[in-house]
Length: 441
Image (cartoon, rainbow, N blue to C red):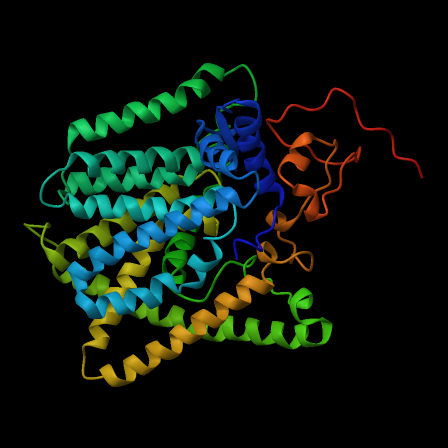
């Protein structure tokens, strides 16, 4: 999937930040444009994209970093699941997390939002490892994960909200020296952005609340709760399931394959949504029956409290969002939503229905792998050309100018159109001095 990953508008903006660092030695002090206006603060986009480009001048280089982070945090989470849910829980987690189509899709192409699931998972692991006593390096990684997430994508603020609530409720302890060390490094990466305020495009978002209607907070809470239920299932985003297999299978077979893939996603996805809704109902009913936990740092009682309070903190951040909630804004909840599903599925695996559950798990794992192959060959971000189903983040716009970056990173192989007077230009990348020649009929 990394080898097949495509480049569209968002990817070009990130690559422009990295190219300026790798080829010109310029650290760009801001990231991609945000939905609320302005740009994401800080130089982390430039670093996470530019440093891999120093090693390999190819648009897939920073994508390998994303994939590596997904592998690393799966290993860390597997250790946590083993301690909390045992060997059975690890098997269930491998199916529901590693083979999850959301994780498949968002682990192998360049996008700032794709950094959030592994950073959020690292955040959770650091909370778990400090549930009894603080540790320098885990506190360092905890603050660093929040700082990096905030600079890469604005919804990373959810991690800060979750940390504040869990600290307040006593679910983890904090080592001050480790946290302050990470905070100092994060502040250093923000310093160029702070100095550039008011002197260019590194602007703050227009407003945290401007333009919101009275229905936005409750609508976002409902949408956030639905994404929480969807993340462990096959119901991936509309862009991901915009299947087109023409380039891989030819026009005749592609139509049948598309209908089969779309049908499987909807049928298995809706069935999974009903199951996760039931599991969450059971979870919250148990939580309400035990509203008071005097010692929240023990085993599954600890996990129950962390999941409950993390979701509450997330829904509160959704309520104050200045824009209507979209799927990528809920990425930080991925590991937590899957952990709740893993816990409930593990209980079934150990019940009297375990024979049927194991068979169902095997079938679900095969279907997950099959859907992963469909995503790799049929989704817009992993195939050249084809349908985009009206998705704005799966369109490669024509460029107003030509630029050396397109040759340095081998971007012309993506059928990039340049010197179009009506085209678009990359925000934050200096425009060439010479304007494009007028187009002749």
